[in-house]
Image (cartoon, rainbow, N blue to C red; front, side, top):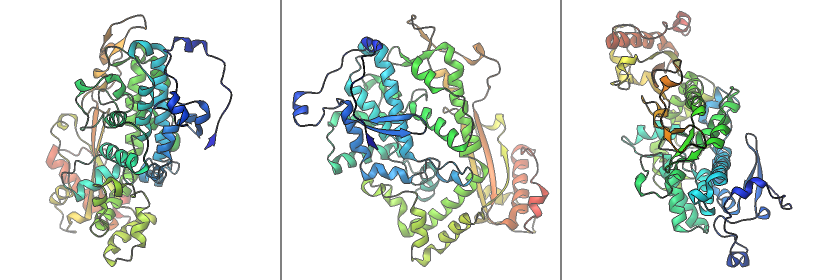
Amino acid sequence: MGEYCGAAPEEDPAMALVTPLPTTTAAAAANNHPSYGCFDRCSTKQVFDNLHGNISLDPLAREFVDTEEFQRLRDLKQLGLTYLVYPGAVHTRFEHSLGVYWLAGEAMNNLRLYQGEELGIDRVDMQTVKLAGLLHDIGHGPFSHLFEHEFLPRVVPGSTWTHENMSALLLDSIVNKHQIDIEADHLKIVKEMIVASSKFAATESTKEKRFLYDIVANGRNGIDVDKFDYIGRDCRACGLGCNFQYWRLLQGMRVMGDEICYPAKDYLSIHKLFTTRADLHRTVYTHAKVKAVELMLVDALVEANEYLGIALHAQDPTDFWKLDDTIIKSIETAPNDELNKAKGIIQRIRRRELYKFCNEYSVPKDKLEHFKNITAQDIVCSQKSSKVLLKEEDVAVSNVKIDLTRGKDNPLESIKFFKDFGCDEKFPITDERVSHLLPAYNQDRIVRVYAKKPELVEAVSEAFENLQLRMYGEKTQVHDTPRKKRIRFH
C-alpha cells in the first residue's frame, strides 16, 4: 500500500447538493487521531484492486486491515478448491473484503448525494456501513463455505454455526486485543449489519435507518454490494463473461419509506443479478469435479478432526482466526500415524485421483417441495446386482441446491420499484408484466453420485439408476453413465 497525499481538488458543483458533514473535532485533531468517520486525504492509503481500481482506506479501516486476524484472509481463497478446476480462481477473501468496503462507500455516497439531508445520513453512517463491508467475511473458515456447510455438520450434528456470527464474535476479539478506538454503540451496529441476512439478525422494527442494514448483507430481498463484488470478481477470475452491470443499481437506488427501491426500468438488470449468481453456482461453485474434490477434502478433515480438534477452534474466536487453507499442510506434516488415512486422501487429491463422478439427475418439478436429501445409504440399499457388494463408505453423494437466493420464491417479488425520480410511489412488479421468457421456477435440486474407488463406477451407477426408478418410476438422469466410464477401470 502506498500512501497518497495530494492537494485538495476543485469543488465539484454536484457536491453542493450534499448536506455538509461535521469536520474533525478540535480535541481529535490535537491528539492527531480523527473522530469516528472524520479524516482527510493525507490520512488515507491507496490500494489498487484489479476489479475496482484505486480503493482509499480510511484510518479506522486501516487499523482493522493491519491486524493479523484480517491479514489471515490472504490465506483464504474466495472459492476454496475451485482453482483445481478453474486455475484462475486463486483470488482471496482479502481482496473481496476490500471490494465490498469500496462498493459500500459508493452506495452511501450516491444516497448521500441525492438524499443526504432527507435521510439524515452523516459520517457515522458512512463509516459504519463501510466497516461492515470490510469486515463481513472475517469469520469464514478454511476453504470458505465448505467448512461451514459440509465439514461442521459432519462432525457437529445439528450445527448452527455461521460465518456471519463468527465475524461478529471475532470483531469483538479484534477490538479488545488490538485496542482499536471505536465506540461500543458503533461497533454494535457494525455487527448487526454483518449478520443482517442471517438468522441472527435483529428484529427489523428495532432498527433506526433500516435501509442502512440492506447495503452490505441484505436479508430483505438479497440485493447487496457483497453480491455485486463477488459476482464480478468470480466471473473475471474464472474467465467467464459477466454482463450484469452493478453500477446501474448503485446509481439508481433510492430510499422510499426506509426501504431501498429501484427504477422500474432496471427490473431485468436485477433479474440478471440473480440469474448470473445462479449460473455461477451451476457452472463454477458446484461443478461436478469441484464437488468431487470438496467431498474428498471433507472426508480428510473429518478423519483429522479427532486428533487436531479442528471443530473445537470454531467455538472460540481467539483460536478460530488461526485456521486457514494451510490446514492441509498441517495434516500432511503431522507425525501422528492416526492421520495416515487423512494424509492418503490429500495425496489422492494432489495426484488428481478423485472420486469418480458416475451420474446426476435433476429432481422433477413436482417433487421439489417434499424432496429429502439422498444419502449414500439410499444408493447402497438400491443395489440389485450381486457382482459387487457396495458399502456406504464406497459412495459419495452431493445434493446441490441452486436458487435465486429465496428458495422456491422469486426474490424480485420482495423488491419495490418506482416509476421515475419525480414519483413518490413505490410498487412491486410481477414477472408476467415484464416478459413471458422469464423462468416459472426459481429453484433446482440436483443429485450427483460418486464412486470412491474407480472399480466401483459400474456398480454405483446401476444402484443410482435403480434409486431413480424406485422413487420416480423412471430414470430422470439425462443419459446412462457412458459405457467407457463404466469399464475404464475394470
